[in-house]
Length: 262
Image 1 (cartoon, rainbow, N blue to C red):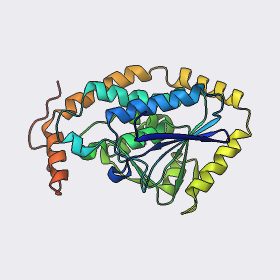
Image 2: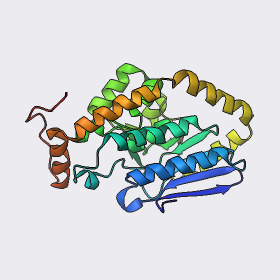
Image 3: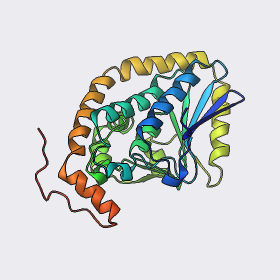
Image 4: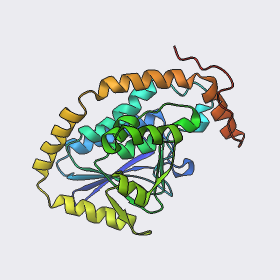
């Protein structure tokens, strides 16, 4: 397994860590593959009862690596499908999955957090769709997950404007399950995991199966459209401008050229 995805198990609780803190746990294709493998391993490991997903260092995950995007070959249909499968693995998993959102979960990091069953945050934690900031429509099933939680109108707003959603607002919208006091995120997340351990996990697994089969039955069709759109947007002038502006530390100037949409 890649060194950037680490896993440990203690007292029935598995912790999967995105461990690339120098880049705020920016995700690449291999990390997505290894994350899927880690989740699937936990799903079949009888020693694992509950899963915690988090990021090393200050932030949960910055999402896609913008420096890799600068090659303009990073964004592809295949990568987008992989991101969607990583997010879906959390939903398909029979074990409860908790996203412990330290700092910011942006872009694909946000999509992964939303793919979890529960999200524990602090007031300083932030969910940020971020995709439109780099002229991309989205990946990791982010739109799908958002729509399930907050409805269409709020999903449209959060995706178009990339408005950051912090702790209490996330709780109000149903995006956060619990708000931990600053400095106690790990303690509160583990306490919540222990609370889940005391529940009838066989019944919880059947609940998760029902949620997946009923509420996510068209996810793969959605994911294919998401991947097609991401591939098109990744080749657009607006995306090139967004990445170039980021690297040059300036504000991007969008809509200067017609973006290919066909």
